[in-house]
Structure formats: C-alpha cells, structure tokens
Length: 396
Image (cartoon, rainbow, N blue to C red):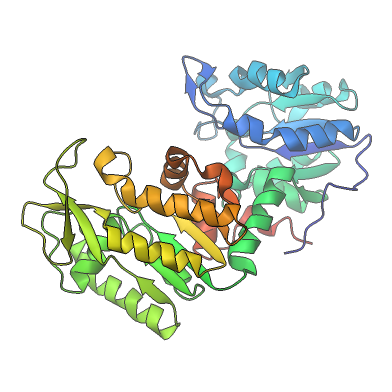
C-alpha cells in the first residue's frame, strides 16, 4: 500500500481537514471515555507544530441526516481542549458560512471542531455536492479515523477524492500493523478466532483459511465445529444449522494447507455464572445439562506451542466466556503467552475487536502486543479481506 505521509509534507499555512472518530461514550452530557479523543492527539500535535490550521470533522451517534441537538459534538469540546492543552474553536456547522468564517478567523497552529457531519443527509449518502462543500474549507485532507474507513461516506471517502489526501498518524500506524499481520507477514502466520457465533464470522473464517498457515477456533463458535464433527455438545450454545458450513470451512482449510486447531478438551459447567463448579471434559464426554464455556488445559497448551512456533499472530475473539471468573483461564493463559513472545521479540501479534480488546485489557497485556486495534467493524472487514473505501481513497 502506497500513501502520502504527513511527515516531511509542506503543511505551513495550510488548512487541514482532519476526519477523526469522536463518537465517544457519553454519560449525563459528559465524555465517559476519552480514548478516541486521545487517539487524535498525535496528528493534531503534528499539524499544529507544522503551522497548519487543524479543522476536525467527526460524527456522533446516528442523527440520520437531521439536526438532533442531543447528538451535537459540542459536549466533547472542553475535554478535547484539555487534552490538546490549548483552546479549541467551535463551528455550528461543517459547511457553509458558519464553518468558513470560523476557519478564516483561525491562526496557524490553532484547532477548530466542526459540528456533526451526520447532521447532513449527504454524509452517509457520500453525496458529491456535500463533499465539495466541505472541500471548500481546506487545502488538504487527513483521515485519522480507521474505525470509520469501512464506510464510503462523504467525510471518509468523498473528500479524499477532492483534496490531496493523507493518512493521519493513528491511521498510518494501523495500516502498517495490518500490513505486518496479513499483507506481507513473516511466516508462519497463525490466527485465533473466537466469539460465540460462526454466523457472524463466516466471511472472516473463509478468508483466513486461505491466507494463514494455522487457525485456532475457540469460544462458542468452536461448539458448532465440534458438533459438525459428530461430538456431543450437551446444552452448549451451538448453531447446529451451520454444521455443513463448518465442514465446508474445514475442507477449505485442508485445500489451502491451513492447519486447523479445534478444542482437544473443554471446560464445562451446568450454569454460566460466577463461582460455579467446573469440570474438564474430553470431546464428546458432555452431559445433556452441561455447557461448554472455556477451552481445556490440553487445548491451551497446544495453542501455546503453536504460537511459539509462529512468527505472526492475528487474534479476534476470546476462547471462552472470559468475563465470568471460572471461564477466563483459557483466554488469559493464551494472552499471557502471546504477550511474553512479543516481549521477547519472537512474535508479531496484532489483535482487534471489542471483546478481544476487553480480554487483553483484563489480562493486562494489551500494551505488550505489537498492535491492538480498537476499530471494531473496520478491523473485522479488513480481516475478512474486504476493500475499505476510506483506505482505498488514500492510495496514490
């Protein structure tokens, strides 16, 4: 992938339209988690130091093309100003005179936040006229919102076609990490895919078995594969109607020389609740009232050996119900082992997806992984092999 980069670009005196992800959690009208605001700081800092005017474009919630006061971006202004350690101007619209006059009044090195781009129906429709109105506001376009890059919207794709376009610092880091993981990885490459449903990750599994050397399947979705192989899964969550699909994925893995790792043993309980008694069972040895809720010790030990014999790891989804104490052990042990290999420079590990990020944070190892993506849907679509419009538009 070839992109322009902000490093070394002539930015002095330029007005940069920067697409950021400020769709932050709010409680009682205040930001309750500023992670996404912090993610924009490196790009904002670079532009300010280079003497550019920084104009921030973002969406909040789903106003569906109408001005909804409770979906205004204005409540993030104070938190953002505190993080950038300077005043942040505000414009009550993202096009027209309200935006133009605010930007004209700016000095190089200053920052302005424009109102929710989704207040205009043209945003999600990727309307060329709306994109052109935004383009009038700046000299260059910077996309620093990988989490929105799977959407072909005016502020993520349309604008990039109208102005010289660059990835922001966070976007560039994400793209570089993804290239390391699946673009041009060091082999052998291993994947771990967990979570509850096969149905939500069919495209992902079908793509990965054609690109990886090894793929481990865990979580509730592993039950569907075990059932497809004729193993009794008791009262476990299982998409029995997808048994043939699971067998198709097993065959596809074989055709592509991708070694598939399914559970060797499992941890079961009669209830999915904290503190309940658990038992380790061999495959098929599950009572009718028991539920499979975690990977067993043999399964985890084999996964650890497979990781140690790999150079690259891509991880999406936990191995069990890690949120409930009796069933977190498989995910935690695998995460600790991957983190240790990363610390020893023996493994490049890239992970993403909401549950995965939560699990790695719970294990205290997110900081040790090579890269942890918080991009959610965009990360998943990238793993599925799909084209991300917001990324494609940045290529030169």
